[in-house]
Length: 154
Image 1 (cartoon, rainbow, N blue to C red):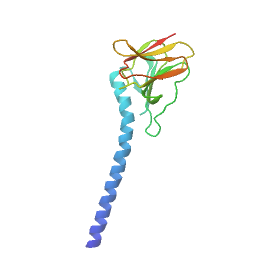
Image 2 (image 1 turned 120 degrees about the vertical axis):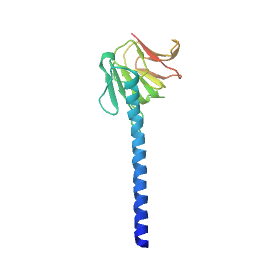
Image 3 (image 1 turned 135 degrees about the vertical axis):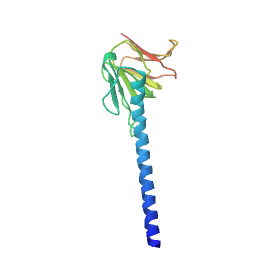
Image 4 (image 1 turned 120 degrees about the horizontal axis):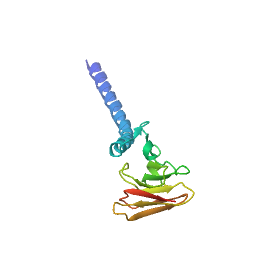
């Protein structure tokens, strides 16, 4: 009888540990998925291509959610400009291929910007139009909280 109780207890503890490990793993995945889901909810016309990547073809915009293992996504691709949720070009990245004034509503917060173009500037602006940071050609900048849009100039 005691052997059955010990075996049942060991089995219950093992199942509890497995459930906790599974919940922890899915919690980190939920962060990535929630960035994609959030962006698709606030910016119409987007298409989720995976749990880490979405595109808005009509806007020339892409969103790449960072992984929990390595949040840094590096600098923007040549010819694009980007907003990142983390400072120093880390976190979830929102990239634009069309040089114009664009909303950053797809991100909950913007902490840094990058200009992967060979000319012009990218200005991070708040909803009042105040410039919070500027990235020159082939450059980047950390920005103050409150970025609502990016203005790309030629």
